[in-house]
Each structure stands twice: as structure tokens, then as C-alpha cells.
Length: 214
Image 1: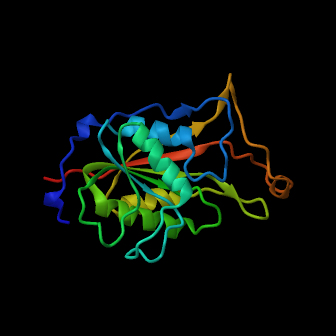
Image 2: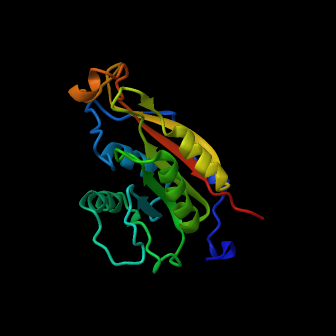
């Protein structure tokens, strides 16, 4: 699809929300690729009713030209997007990349055991192909610990991949469960807590803009 065929969107319409989203008292499930409170906030803050919202999960199927069944968690997330009066779309195959451009792409890097550089480059490449000029990419990610307790932060890989694709870095948002004045965390994994000095209680949301040229 050529850039001229994509629908322009005014950058002036982009609203910059708070850098902290308080998501209620319940801890976020670290194994959930599409945490409902984070997904709902992202959709509401960065799209309008009727917008086309695409989900890119990681890991993704390797054969993108084949017909496939949508993963159950992604199907539930798409249904939630529909309940918010948006058009939810699954990751594209080679057959449907010429479809109407997308207003908002939400990519999840919350799955465990991935190469952050490869994952960030992969979802960014797909997002830039399908987004409208002026469209937005929101990447959900989370710090994690190695088996020896070292804290890994994928933020650098996400930002580097997006900027290499000529996307504009708009914002880094912390999405966290809050009870009163306290951020609540899920119970620590005993296998990790003995070596990890940090408790990961939040989800990172990185937002990028595909600028309209000319």
C-alpha cells in the first residue's frame, strides 16, 4: 500500500494522557498478554469510537500467509475492543495487508521468554505497514527478571525499533494497580523472589505516532 492511499490524521487531535494510569486495586496478572484495564485505557485514550484497532501479540505465527485460528486470549481482547465501539482487528496475514489502514495498533510484548530486540523490530515493522498516516502504535511491555535475578527492561529495544522506523516517540505511561496510595503487586514467584531484589508491579505503555508527511 502506498503512503498516498492511507487516510491522513491530524497530529493536533492526539491527546496526551497522564503518565500514570491507576487501574484499581487488583494486581495485574504477569502472564496476561492483554490485561483488560490496560487494554481498555489504551483504546479509550488513543482512539475514537468507530476507529480501527489492531492487536499484535508476541509471539506471533511464523507462517503469516496461512489461514489460522485466533488465539483465545486475543479473541477475548478483540471482543472487549468491540464493546468499546471500535473495530477490533487481528494481526494481518499476507493476504489482507492491503486492507483499509488502521488508526491504532496495540502490540503486546508481555509474553515471557522472548528476544526483546527481535520482538520490538517485528511488531514495529508490521505496525508501520498497516497504520494510517497519523496513526498510533502503543506497545505494552514489562520488566522481567532472569533466572539469576537480573532485571531486564525492554524499553530501550522498543524505542530504538520505533525510531528506526521513523515513528515519533510520544509518551511512556506507567499502568499500575493502586490501592489508596499504594501500588499493589501480584504475589511474587518463589522461584524468582529469592534472587530478585525488585518486585515488578506495573506495565509499561509506549506510544508512537506515524507522522503524516507532506
